[in-house]
Amino acid sequence: MNVGTHRTPDGHLIPRRLATGVAASALLLAPVACGGSDGGAGGTTSITVAIPPAVSGIDVYAAQAQGYFTRHHLKVKIKTVNGGSAIVPALASGAVQIGESNVLSVIQGASRGVKEPCIAGANTDPPSGHYLSLLAGPRSGVRGPADLSGKTVAVNATSGVNELLTDAYLAAHGVNPASVHFIGLQFPDMPAALKAGRVAAAMTTEPFTTIAMGQGGTVLTGTPLASVPGTPTYSCWNASRSWVSSHQTVAADFVAAMRQTDTYISTHPDEFRSIVGEHLKVSPQARSAMTLPLFTDKLTADDVTAWENAARRYGLLESVPASDEVLMEAGT
Image (cartoon, rainbow, N blue to C red; front, side):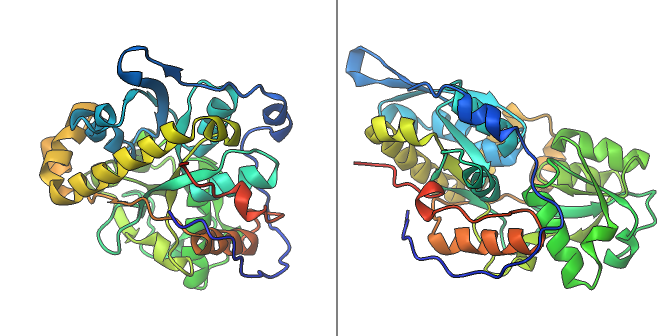
């Protein structure tokens, strides 16, 4: 992973709304456990990894099934949590050692003093298909971006990355993002909310995009990341700075195992879809139709800068943290 420290200066834009997330003061006071336990035989280290309840987190199960963790002397326990805002306190408390977070959540946390940097890229939105998608519900009457003005849109966490993606899409089509009301809703609950008309639209991810489409949802955009200049990498593997500092070899082994997994998924997509079916409630038809994310360990300072610029433009970031608070090399 390239963790260069060059930062492009961004503008001084007045925030429309500031990210809320978890209470920063509580996180700063929370004890950070070292985490991970060394196993006696063979030097195996046990760690807990947090993932979201979506296809993007199933790569950890693929790594486990292919034996990549074992090859790198790791015993991994997997815990499902609802997005980056939930991973932050889990890392701070030591309940988990590594988590999959969107890059913007890491930036927002770092701006409040939360020291949980990215150690490698995890996945991003592919250039085509409908992995991350803004969907309109069948009862909404929404046929295009202009119809969203005055409507309610569901995102997995308010003031987060998927709200930013919706803002960027609306702005790119001449719609004032401030005219839209956002509510927080977990990804698995979005298809039912769209079908029932409880929300007009939702920023979904797979397999819930495909499930919602099968229930009458209409894709407004299947590539919302394209509305963010630079199309930066969407998510990363992150950990507390103190844990990485004292477990550099373990962190590097995890990144190496996931890099192998990225290659495996890209060359065996059908096998990966089968693994998805073992861990998420999704029909065989939806598994075949869903768009997979692009799994990648690539994450650069330019990606971070692109997110910071976009977040400041849409009022989701008040101050820019130091580069080394967002990116940290995993390894000796």
